[in-house]
Length: 281
Image (cartoon, rainbow, N blue to C red; front, side, top):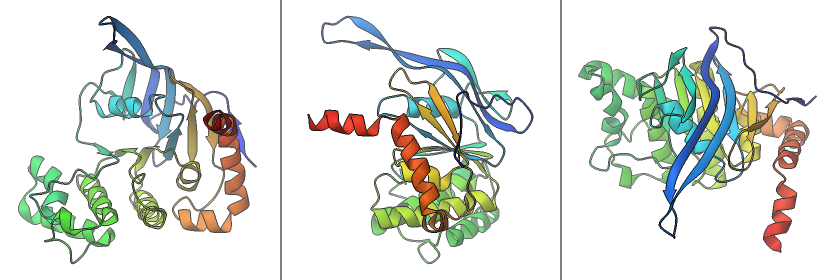
């Protein structure tokens, strides 16, 4: 059965890893006439992500999804409201939050092992511990044997695996992921979704995941938050009441009907059919 709730979960227990409380963000922008205008990106956003959950955030382009992740990472400060990670107010970047973007952003002058170890170096981890941790992650991400290769020598999918290994290397408690697989072909994308899901499950990580792919959001998540057009706010929370979150390929294959029902519900919430007709006109 498909479950939906009109308001986000506002559980304030110690189980909560990520929490946005009445968050809004606006930007000043200079228009073509030279006058400044205030653009409200998001408003009245309330959401929580509990320990070990994977929650997807979907919505129209420009609705403020990435703005929310930037505030969660400490790169932006809310104009109003507050963001908390592990009960601590976010006012700057912190080491126990991992941030993975659409582009791998690997350093071209460092080989793959050195890229994976980059955050550990910054944290002052000694070389033997760095090597041990990077070797574990490179094996888990199926990059063993490519430690001494450079980013330009790897495929896009392999670079994203390396970026995932680098993100996980510092053992962040929370992961913020902004469409990390959007630039990949369909087959590679599904393989990396599987890698990510298995890793998040085995290491009991908490993740807030942005995607435009509705099937991806259902396949990978415990819950999906749906945002409105800008100024973005949460208009619906969908509980994905399906097994096999750690195995999205099996969830897609074995539960096609159920996954399809969730995708159809998300399409309705986002007015996808209506928007497609408007684009054709």
